[in-house]
Amino acid sequence: MGYREMREKIDKSVFLLPVSKTKDYSMIMEAYFEGARCFGENRVQEVAAKFPAPDQRPDGMEVFLIGQLQRNKVRKAVALCDRIESVDSIALLQDIDRESARIGRRMPVLLEFNSSGEEQKSGFRTPEELLEALDVSLRLEAAYVIGIMTVGPLGFDETLNRTAFSKTRRLFERMKEKSSLISVLSMGMSADYEVAIEEGSNEVRIGSAIFGGRS
Ligand SMILES: *Cc1c(COP(=O)(O)O)cnc(C)c1O
Image 1 (spheres, protein in one colour):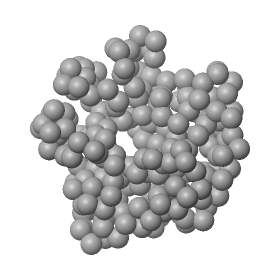
Image 2 (tube, protein in one colour; image 1 turned 135 degrees about the vertical axis):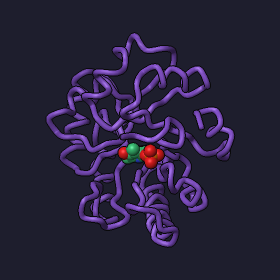
Image 3 (spheres, protein in one colour; image 1 turned 180 degrees about the vertical axis):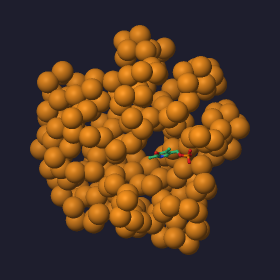
Image 4 (cartoon, protein in one colour; image 1 turned 90 degrees about the horizontal axis):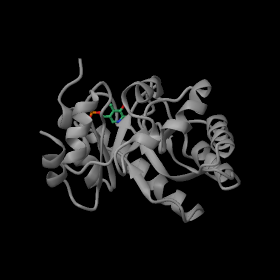
C-alpha cells in the first residue's frame, strides 16, 4: 500500500518503521520521498550493499538493524547502522558498546524479548535475563538501552499474539522503573500490528504491507 498510506492508517503516536529488507534502493527512496526517514534491515551485509555510506545518505536517512546480529559483524553494524533493535545477549551488548566507543559514537539499542517461547526465535528467554542485561547496560559508556523489541508468534493467532504482546508490555513497564531512558516498545508487523497497537506498542515494523511480499 506504500509508506504514506500506511502512515495515514495508524495512529500518529505510533512510530512506523518501514522494513526494506530484500527491497531495492529505489523503493527505499520512494518511501523516503513520502516522508520515511528510518528503515529496518535484517542483515548487515545487505545494509552495506544497498545503502550509500552513512555520510552520503540523503538528509536524515537512518538504518535500524532488526535481524539477529552475529558477534563477528558488530564492528560493521555499528559503523553502518543508527540503532540496533535485536540485542539478545549481554555478550553482544558489550561488543556493541566496545565497538561503538572505539569509533566514538553512542549507540541506542533495544533488547529483544522472546515473548512466544518458540525455540527457533532469538531474544532473551526470560524477563529476569533481559532485566539483567538492562542493569549491565547502565554501566556502559557507548551503548544504551532505549526499549524492548519482540516478534509475535509464528502464524497469526489473535489470542496467542495478544498474550505475547501484553507480556512484553508488562516487561517494558518494569524496564521503565529501572531506567529513565526507556521509551520504545517495538512490536507488531504486517500481520499483527493492529493487535500490537491495542496492546500498547509505540513502534511497528512493517515490511510486506508497505513494499509488497518477499519471495
Ligand atoms: C521482516 C521483519 C519485519 C517485517 O515483517 P513483515 O511481515 O513483512 O511486515 C518486522 N520485524 C522483524 C524483526 C523482521 O525480521
